[in-house]
Image (cartoon, rainbow, N blue to C red; front, side, top):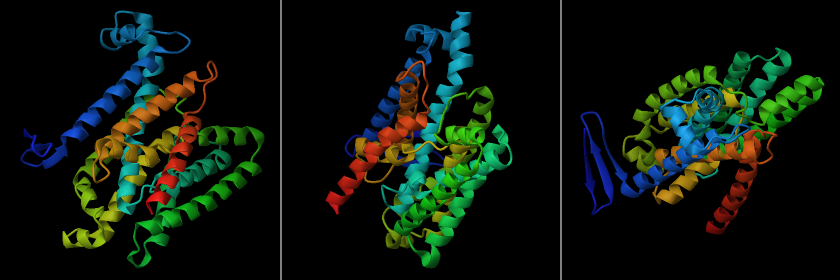
Length: 349
């Protein structure tokens, strides 16, 4: 593989036998800064808690392991949660970037459209009807999210109707599923209702190494599946007519990309519950920082990782020793961002 930087056009050109792509130098720098910030917050989070550890000792515990107790606290107790926060944030950012590109709308997000709500419905059915269990709850959430996506797809894309209808239909389906979820919780006994409500808040509490391996493996497979599809995203954002003129099959491309987007969200939701607004905010914030004409996957992933790991650190320390679900923090921050986005879109239109 060879890489060439064209400073006149501010582009980094990467070529190999199987890959040829161009990335803006500003995009590379923004992604590097976001990743560095996410790693810095992660190191800070690894060192904070009931047993505080300075950053230098955190790094020593990670790479040298000469202090046994520090290594126990960092590796066994805290690192799985922080690692999943970084990976899940990146996955949600990528999921939102895909859906926003397909719909050509900054409101195109799995939590706005209703995929998260469908996953919550599937998990509720398992928790309240089958008694829960981590594996069964995760499977129910996965089935619920995919089922909601299928229903929304069938309702939204009749007669080849495009992305805006997907958002409107998704909001409607999400509202109906939210009503079903409320009805299910109200009919449940107190203990089951509290368990379901806690899961529905979206939390990284209690996650450990047994969840890390399967999550990383599934997300790695999804990333490999996304690579050949990613080159169609900038073309789709140009509009249906131009995309068709470039030979892109609109129906098939949208279906595959939405399926991958739902899968990224479903994996996160199945393990950590529905974490709202990361998929909505990360792609647009990354795009604004990188100043790219299209919604890039790399800035969205880097911004998503930073947002989630920072939100999780705030959730742990804001009311210490009480630990909040990370979804409470993301909803609080995301609500402000959504209000700003709606006002900005209204002014632009």
